[in-house]
Length: 57
Image (spheres, one colour):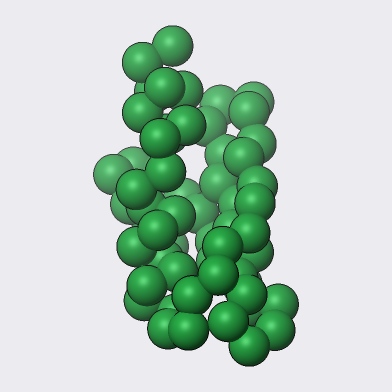
């Protein structure tokens, strides 16, 4: 999925736990989030603060 020009992925690990990953240049950001709904997990990844910090650097 692409959001604001950044490609990212969100993968369900188990019920309610999602793994996310995106890359900006050479920097790779990964993590996990908890959400019952897939769209909620995607929304949380799209709103991560490091994206703004990495884009302005």
